[in-house]
Image 1 (cartoon, helix red, strand yellow):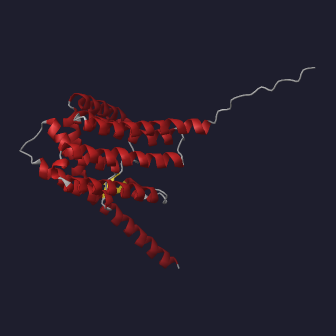
Image 2 (tube, helix red, strand yellow; image 1 turned 30 degrees about the horizontal axis):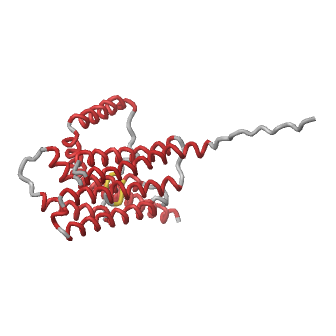
Image 3 (cartoon, helix red, strand yellow; image 1 turned 45 degrees about the vertical axis):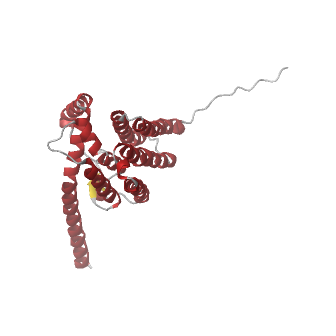
Length: 267
């Protein structure tokens, strides 16, 4: 009697399968970020900017998809930080160096180095702080996040490509200023909106969807104008986020003092 042959089955790990999708998106973001440098080398700065914007969209999606399908992992977290370093630190620095900063010689290269270092410090601090207990501060970032920082330093180039200039701009002066200010905002503790825990009422969902479709429609038609306008709006939101943060902080401090007073009265 012949021995019965064992049947082998390929057993899929559902957890691993859920982790693969967001990590694949993250790796695609790395490739797009690196490709933007290649476009800049060829002098195709329009495509370089588009590549960075696509990388930013992917960066906003991969984490949300991972949480949605319960595919978060430590590898994914570290991979996401590495992607941000390349796509929003190294790539924007090279793009702006090939476009304008190379005319400033060693000072232009120094600005690139400072910016990339600030992005690295920003990501390191974010990874450390992300392990803390959830609180009302989760509605805010400490400093400008790296994707926003990467797009902010590209703003002079984006404005020049849009052709939307109300007055003559000296990019030899404006570009270094953007690099210095953005580098400072990256490593500062300036509170900025995180937009992670926005609660949208069900009755306003249709208006939100309409707004998203309208935004991307305009983005396809007036690409650089919309990106430049979005960057300006983000800059205008910075003082608003600071005032909002201070208001909430003061309110929570008053609540804490009130709770301590009530506890003392009980004792």
